[in-house]
Amino acid sequence: MVENMTSEIVEEQEFSAEELASVDTIIERYARKPGALIPVLEEIQETIGYLPKSIQRRIAIGLRIPFSEVYGVVTFYSFFTMVPRGRHIPLVRCH
Image 1 (cartoon, rainbow, N blue to C red):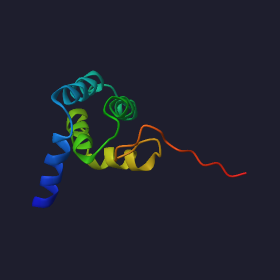
Image 2: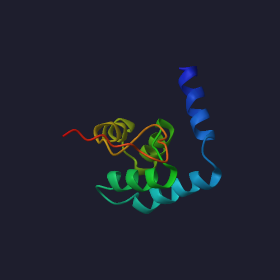
Image 3: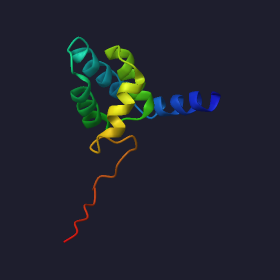
């Protein structure tokens, strides 16, 4: 339990105050709109680059939905990522 709390604190520290303010602004803009989760996730990922659990918890609290719902959507759709990605994403195509 303490280890999980420590990792969340570290994740929060990865983001600047400006980035966290941007995240909060996005959440507030969608807070009262039904079906807002995916647009919120997309916009936040676009803003900070990825969706770690600490940010997912922030989203769940702000949208007043269960964390499990946020986590479920993030892990279901391949276009969301919980880890930072590099600048260039290689694509492999098989013929």
